[in-house]
Length: 549
Ligand SMILES: [Zn+2]
Image (cartoon, rainbow, N blue to C red; front, side, top):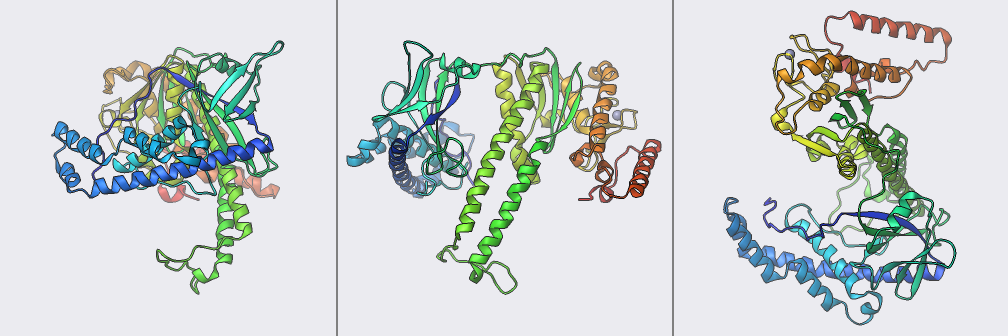
């Protein structure tokens, strides 16, 4: 695969800082029907541009000159770039050419529904989707199906076409409307919300209309089709800061794992936390719905399974799976659940990011390939999205005037380093503790890495033993205390990730209803803990005894 072989810069964006404000819209039945019609035209138009663009891409890639350009060495940067841009020019594969294409496609009745600027932004969107395929970042493009429709449409400016206006009143606060064609959709504005008031005090660059499927037509704020409309305003300036998010002055080391996060500031209290533990019930509910859908699909399509219940191989032209009404309802329920989970995750990420920033403006962490994690830990990473957390944190830090240093792991190797003797020792995944013959430890490995990160010099991120001698004296007790708190929570029945070095079996409260057994179990658990303390080895269990799940 020739990745990144067609160098093309991202569409240039204006440099001024922007932020988003979202306001719910009130759409009456007639208005909703018209919005629906406009968006449907937008969908068809997008698909038309995408299809024409895809033909251009295919022709361009079939050209022998394409293979020749790919064969050029990467060191010959200029020649490569020239070869690819000549090809793009010849086949009309650029954002500008797509705008021209949009002009040609927006004819007759389409033009009545879609103004020129909106058509342009849709063409840019189609171009970006295809360009991802072109540079090897995506396999294919997705056409928007009729059932799903186009979920958003945006303008480039706020003076014509789709736009948002505030109308002052003689008394009371101004009213806000989204204007599109002849419709005026009232926005629900809560002027007492400081975030809203702050946002509306800034100049609007452009507005974006977003349609979201609610779980059912009866959901709050939904229209008869079960759709919700909101307007997203893209504003010039920086977002509002709630006063409670005041920033401290500490420097913080982070160690992010697929399911946990270790936070070790230079002075303040250290923490070891499971990542987004609150999402577990949501994820379980989705899993249940998924299995339910699988059973429904099986019941509706018995002919596609063999006598042992395995799905049969199906060719490309095989008839579609039949979908029962029940199946469709489950699918809607599952989609609603997934949206809820995503929103919940976002708010958890936001809360954690603000908690971290509240301690200090300087954050040091190792740069991790989250894509690699995705391959290794798939489900866990997909649920907790640590990469998104780091993105969120980066934005939060920047908006409070702080800085997030991401140190390349290759040079630091914090997870292997020991500051007592300077040795680099690879720890296998199951080894949760850092304990070195030189006398350092035992200390939970994530907390230890975060400690090492906290005292790195971002300008010269090479860990050296001398650097850590003094900090370690103050930090050791804090790290132990952080792990004690995790142990305490585990004892109270909270499920903690295995990486935290607490054996599962002992982490739960005894579940037996009988009093006597409980006492026995409790005693035996205490005995285990006592035995732990006396063990000469660090308290890490062999893999077999740990993985009880
Ligand atoms: Zn050592």
